[in-house]
Length: 109
Image (cartoon, rainbow, N blue to C red):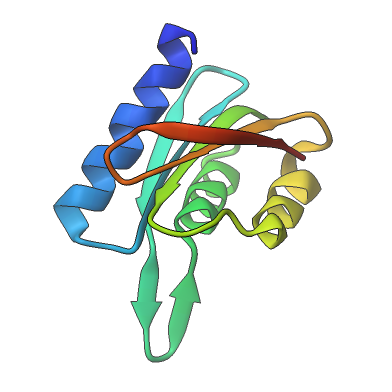
């Protein structure tokens, strides 16, 4: 993994740990800006950590995504790829790993 993707792991891990959320995620847009988010799990609002990152990137005017990382204790849900694919198109790598930052698999939009 290159240094830029490793930064995403560090951001996702720190965000998850700080909030105590089920997931932490981070993504890098085409301009090199990074966004980190944690799962939102309120009675009236539920958003995955990756969904939070996508929303922040869209709201910031990002034009696409280079890569993303999702850290959680469970399996990666393929349904997570659809919103990212809608926003950034095909071929965006999404690295998935454990809460400690150990990566396991990589998916692609």
